[in-house]
Image 1 (spheres, helix red, strand yellow):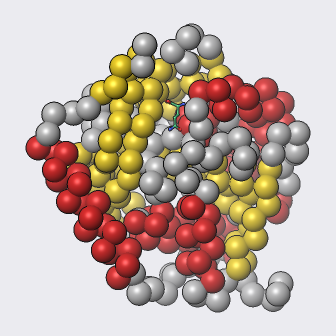
Image 2 (cartoon, helix red, strand yellow):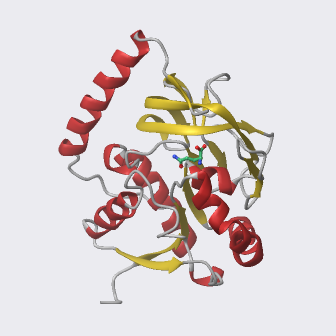
Length: 260
Ligand code: GLN
């Protein structure tokens, strides 16, 4: 132990922000590194704890309900937002899912009009609507490693709009994405990525998992990293199932759920 190369992941609010099995994303990162002879060292950053930015290559923040986001809002502003922003400027990578994505942006305004300040690392602002955007999603991304289709499941009241400092993670092929209107999904700024997609996201998107890992490894060790390919035939089977679901959805009317 300790001799293998390792990625140091800081899991923000692991208990407070964890719906739709978002914690499963970390299991995927862990396994995909282990299969290649690397370790994943996870440190948890609950409320009250400061972030050791010099010891982090990758931040992870999962999804949560509005009340979960409200529950961490004061701590986020008091202890963490500025540290995460400065780490992003130093090239640390980050993956932020749904409620976590909203908190990586500037602000999330709930349907009751409560404003929750975010980290401000993604140029995104979110406002909740009385209807929720729900269902299976497929997007097409053009990352530096090439094009990829990303599959997941969305369930959010927030409508996110991107400013000029972020580009979308992908273009919606099927589903709603950031706001149900402009066909964008998620956001990218430097090595930080945010997305509405749960499922969890990474088990059926191994290319995206490797993209995140590559960014984290580049932060840790410098230079360019090529991760050796893995046998992804189980993941490919999951993707075929996901693709069948989104193809069906493309033909069906879009599903919005009224919450009040
Ligand atoms: N509370 C947020 C919304 O409904 C995020 C929900 C989630 O993480 N699934 O928009």
